[in-house]
Amino acid sequence: MTLRCVGQPVSFLALEAYALDELPPEAAEPVRAHLGACEACRKALRAIEDDQRPLPAFLPKVANKPTARLRLLRYGAPTMAAVALAAGVLLVIRGSDREHGDHRTKGREVSLRVEGEDPSYEAGTLAVGVPLKVVVACPPSLHASWDVVVFDEDGASFPLPQARITCENQAALPGAMRLRGASDKRVCVVWDEGPAPALRASYRSEVDLPPERSRCITVRAVPR
Amino acid sequence: MEAYTRYGRALLRKAERVLRNRDDALDVVQSLFQDLYETKRHDVDLPYLYRAVTNRCLSLLRDERNRARLLAENDASLMPQARGNVERLDDLELLKKLVRTLDDETSEILVLHYFDDLPQEEIAAVVGLSRKTVGKRLETIRETACSLQGAPS
Image (tube, rainbow over all chains, first blue to last red):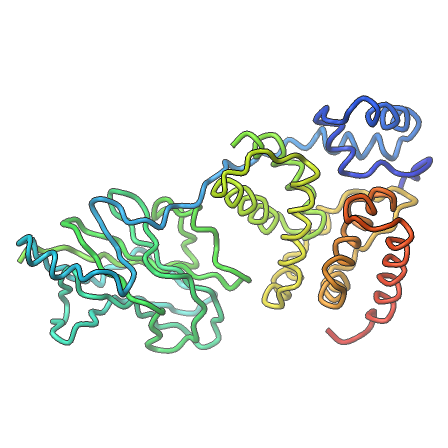
């Protein structure tokens, strides 16, 4: 049964402020008096006070900044290949087709691979500093926002802008990234059919990715 | 972030009332505090945050890409029990049509009236309009709702 307020209902804003003891005395007093006489508003206040659902931890946005060990630079940044060659630390990163799990979304297969943009790119190996494209194969019926997350021991990095793409057999995500470092990386794509990509801050490790909406491969660094 | 700990639940309840979807409400509140954190805004109070959540919920509702998902995930249990003499807008489809039709200011008035149960005097103070103008805007909302009901989405 819907309870009827005895007068002008106390707004939810006022009830929340009252529950937090944030109303100034001159505003709190009429609210208190109203609550004393109005079962409907008392019940609304009780619902607020009884709401003990856990509040998820606040997660600041994950910095898009490259880390010390692994640097992922947006395409167009200074050429890392030259730097790497000069330092004598050229590595080869070999893409692996090992994927975690058999992730499908609503029965639709999505696969992922990383390709080198450099014409000298040798199949299966990716030189450090070479611009890398992330290419997905996804069904045309999938309309989603896509994000790329790279994990290594330093945590998560987001080398490419989030983007909506038209799905096909070889749909390249906009932009390119460059990898540096001597450690293996997990390169993942995560997609969201919602309005906007999911909050990056929620992806701090691979286990945070939604299994039904993500796909990962290992990109292995091999000294050459 | 202290403000998040203090006001987070109140803002989640507010976002849930409008969106009727816990996950979207969480996203709205988290993204709001992330932006505040990045801009180092710490001097925020509940009325300010309430208004910010209103605007973010309206943006989400206006985005056509959300339409099917929000309707599919509509959780009516997140609506608080109505108090007898307040106007409610329980039809999420109609709400989405309204916020795509009305201007930003009138949409905000809609939320303050139908979801926050604010009296007209307080709405006037929040949006910086006269009480009379707020009354007219509420009439506009009712008329628009009538004309949209039954209209194709």
